[in-house]
Amino acid sequence: MRGQVSQFLLMTKRRLSAAGKSSRRIKFKRAPRPASTIPAETKYALALTSMIKTGGRLVEDIILSQLDRLIRIGQVKADSDRRNDAGWPDELARMVGDFRQRFERETGSRFEQALQEAESETNGKNMRSFQNQMKKMLQIDVFSQDPDLPFALKAWENENRRLWKNVGEQMIGDVEGIVSREMAAGARRETIAEKIMNRLGVSESRARVIAVDQVQKLQGELTRRRQVQSGVSHYKWRTSLDERVRPAHAEREDVVFSWDSPPEDGHPGQPINCRCWAEPYLEDLI
Image (spheres, rainbow, N blue to C red):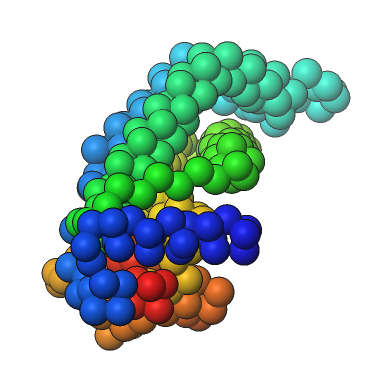
């Protein structure tokens, strides 16, 4: 890495000299704001919430449509003195297994497509934004190649797969838990159905948060890698300059940080739902 950085610095100075610029006297312009990640966040969130809605449809088809039958099975067992090994818990477990298989089958490929699209759009815009920023500040074209970038992207993909699997498993587990508890308490069908649908709403909200946060985290990590790969060791913290910026981040506006020494909650984009960004700090580079 150090050899690559030194080569970049030497190349930059040569280009500045060829352009008639003094590296000691150059005054850097402020970098333009990176391209917005909102389009990628929105599409990713819509894809994930659409898959949760698919889960809701499967819940209605597989479980809610059979609630009356489950309740009747429970009533027969309660009124009978003989053991009923094929009671409603066994029926519910069978339904949940069916639900899990169908949910994975109907959403698996859709999730992978949404994941790849979010990654591709974010990575492409980040690369173009970085090149635009450096050209604006240095008045030269800068091309940075990171041989480890595919591994970083794969790590991001795997984390998203883990998060999505957790969303699905928690949704399935919560539905099973609601039915089990309410059935044991003798609740009516309407009560059980209402609680299940409310829980699916929670899953949709969580899917939206994950989509937005993960795209922002990818944006922040790509920015870090491209700047460090190009020899940029520090950055200026930039915020969205609106009322949604958390107070601790508003205090960091225009403050210089080292990529080797992040703030307590991380670099821009790393804290959950952080919309801040890192402006390349070039004074110590040249």
